[in-house]
Length: 128
Image (cartoon, rainbow, N blue to C red; front, side, top):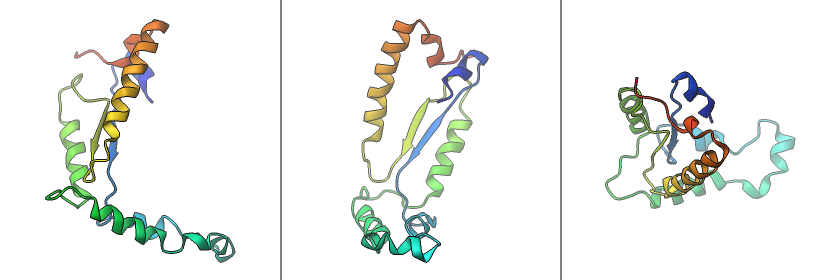
C-alpha cells in the first residue's frame, strides 16, 4: 500500500474510480478471451459486460458526470494539493457505491492495529 514510503516523506494516494461505461473501452474488452477455445468455456458470460454497463448506467446519480475525464481532473486536483495534505485514498464515483465508507472503516482499524504495533508513523507523512 505504500505506507512504508511515509518514513521517506513520500505520499501514497489511491484513487478509486467508479465504473465509467463510456469514454473507455473497459467493458468492451473486459470479458471475452482472445482465444476462441477459451472463450467457449465462458459461454454463460456472453453479453454480461453490456448487461452490467446498462445496469451501472441506470444507477448513476442524477446529474452526475459520466465521462472518465472527471477522474483525471480529480487526480490532477489531488496532485496540486500541498505536500502532507493529500488524502491516502479518494473516490470519484458516479454510482456512489459507498466504497469510501468501507475504506474509512479499514483505515480506522489499520490505525488501531498500527498503534498496537508501534508503527503509527507509517499512516501519514509530515507536512515539510
